[in-house]
Picture 1 (tube, helix red, strand yellow):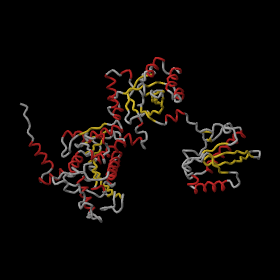
Picture 2 (spheres, helix red, strand yellow):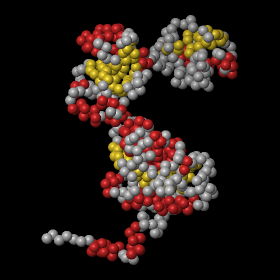
Picture 3 (cartoon, helix red, strand yellow):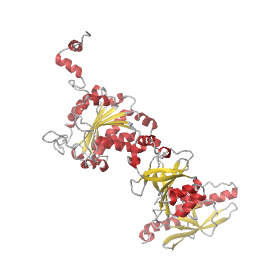
Picture 4 (cartoon, one colour):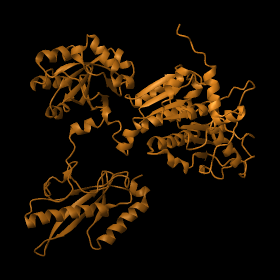
Length: 598
């Protein structure tokens, strides 16, 4: 069925809009080669008081109105308006693919043509010599070819200055759909320096050991932009080789060495140290296919960050994440994407099949420690970051771990466990911390932000939160009878909380956002008046009255409990012992044995 038969309302709209805009016209619809056309004439007024007739034809695409119609001159020479034709003889107008939408119609196209023609008349009659209308050059075959990327080549390229040809290693992670080119260092290929540079390369962190151990070899060739414009037309292999020789892009010896013996199947053409064109050679059929190259410039990783000053500030921060499961992995990934350059990952678990459905890592990481799998993932996002993996379960914080994390700018507890230990450690070293939990089955979750000397400690905040929630309607009507049920086994082991990845991810994203506020703050004093507890509901359950509800708890009036050992540790000991601070110090000093020098 043709579009005008299937979309009769759209066709009626076309006719009515044309009749309203041009009440007396000779517009006619006709069918040619199973497509609908419109013919008509525009009458352009001249300075002398007459008019110039401009007949045209408009071709509707079969999927109209979701694609733009094209309009052509009829009975006029092709160059009547200079270089404003594109795609054959169709006009280059200001209503085109990038600006078209289905609410527009043939009226918009014809009016665009009318503006172009009137501008042309004005140029002719006033002898201005310029045409003030949008222009865009017709894309070349090379432009179109480069639009399909099949080759990834690191930039900038460490090419030898005088060489015009050389080898590179590559591998194909997606069969024939794409090749990844090894950093090109042909002069040092046999030396240990070459291996060292590859190992230290940021690209090795992205593409893995495939770069280092790839046995597939291709050829790179230097060529000018003019040569590339011509090469893309040489789709026959013999013609391709003759062109390389005749244009002296390669010597006869090099051409024979690389192409006469069916040696080079992958060719990358380089202009001004940038890979431009990728040629894939099929010796069996004697054909050459061409595709574009992408040159990933890793210095542009943060080029689209909304605020360069904030990105620079975050880049200097260090974050420790305790727990690298479904929540912690998302937290780590978002920190890296936000600009954090140094992370400490702590977890003792292995990545198994049942983890993958919620974890940010994938099946290719199965069997690795979660910290190592996550480190690999983060390095593939930003190879310049520093990631320290600690493969241990945190029950207490031994000295070797303490030394690594006591200088962190923020610590995130993503275990839904050991809050007390982390709470005491962070309070002692005055480190801001965030404690995030996902409720059973992922119906919601909570984040508590603790800033020593600004907010009470975690235990005080958590107890006050429980007291507040007890007054809420629906508090006792929890989905699993407990306030938070982490499904403990009889032995007391805490099992992972069942939840969809998307439900858990909401809590992780809130956690990162609340942490970024700390990392970007000029002063932490402002957090006294901010809500430092957020509860998020994915479902209309428990205290959440609506699906996707955010409850911000006002913590500005929260103060520490007077008997809190974390907030007032020394004072509690003084009270317990009935001694002053100085008396306790005296006892301590008198109790320490001193070694005699003799």
